[in-house]
View 1 (cartoon, rainbow, N blue to C red):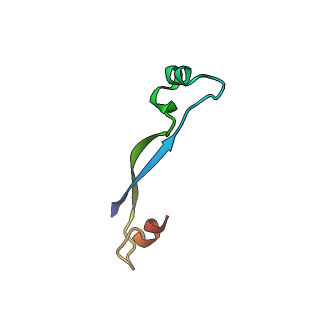
View 2 (cartoon, rainbow, N blue to C red):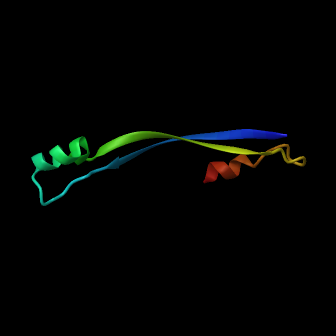
Length: 70
């Protein structure tokens, strides 16, 4: 029998797109809010799904403590 287990994680990341040879106005025209001086960020949700057979010895698809460490 196959089952699916899931692990969900949340993280934030920021970036800045900026060409120093252009003015702030030109950078904003090209890159929009991604050119902000103090960077521009996003919040992400990552869901990892693992599908597998249940190990008859452990009753698990995998040891979730290993997945949590990664």
